[in-house]
Image 1 (cartoon, rainbow, N blue to C red):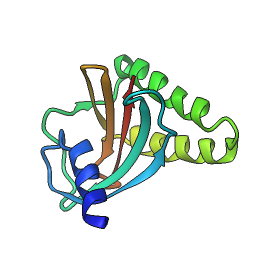
Image 2 (cartoon, rainbow, N blue to C red):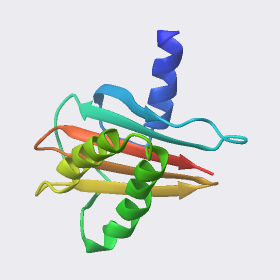
Image 3 (tube, helix red, strand yellow):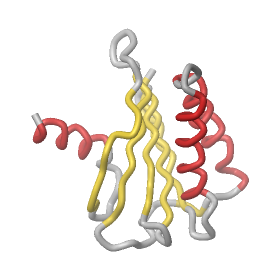
Length: 129
């Protein structure tokens, strides 16, 4: 079972071109019709670094964050303290001076990665509709 869970996590984080040291699911939504889901993973790298093809967090990236972070409030509306804690953790990585992100949208799946080399902490928010 652990091996299967690990493969699922690694598959969801397969867009990262760096060596992942640790990863875990920090939120998993109830499954909807078909493949609908909203999941959040945390990860760290074996060696903190700027990840190739990631971009520096900027004002232009705020719309991606607003949409995905808004899903946290929707999914956790019955647990506002957990929602707040999760938002704060993601914002911590995003708001670092070296905060970087990658947004991908393909075939109904959107992924928003955020990572800080200084903290060696990152998150992947996956929305499948």
